[in-house]
Image (cartoon, rainbow, N blue to C red):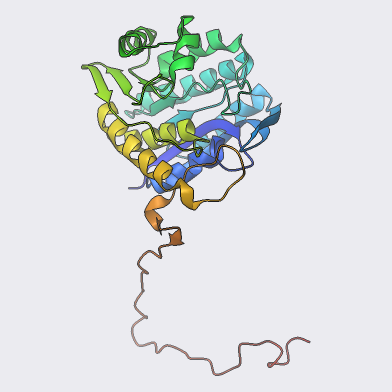
Length: 310
């Protein structure tokens, strides 16, 4: 059965981040993607030039509409923007999660606390941090902050060592999430380690830092891949391992894209492309119905030759 995963996030018209990246990652990881919009942004690979927020009641209406009709197996939350939207999302999801639990189902929830765009623009109002921490963190199956986001959620300095990362991951987990993945991409090191704090302890995921400008939407892509794997039944530790491998491939193949002049996007569908060329999946040929011969037209395909056009 194909799983259904919902993204609650902002829109990026350049396609590299936000719900556009989420839907690509969902498809690439083999789940059916859906999206609820919290904000419309005017942005490209060079930065964000404008943000138009969706009214909080309509954000809730979108969530309610999806859950009223579709079996949702996992949710990814990205850009929340302000405290009012955080409250609306939390209220709608709390109701949906309670209904699912009453019916014997569990829904995984990945929370990516998006605060700052790649170009430096603020995507979360300062006063919204407390609402996000108080209302959404306790609902999360997996929280995925980078180092500045982890520091902001805890009102602490940014981690500068592995020991700091581990300590902040544990402190964040104490606020309610079942597991916390603190991403070390901002660490001043040749390596880019991530640490997962879960019920069974701390787990480190090692990676070499990749020199590339194609980093637009990496956080969105990772959190969406995590939601997809959790929806398919993976544990948090398994999901992190699979999602990080997928993202590494997407970053490695990003050089085949030619999108913008700033921080470029990753290649979400790298498994379907080889050296920048589209790889046609195997075609499924359906058998003809019994006793029916294929019909071959002898009419010319050009409508002008058929007298159907000028």
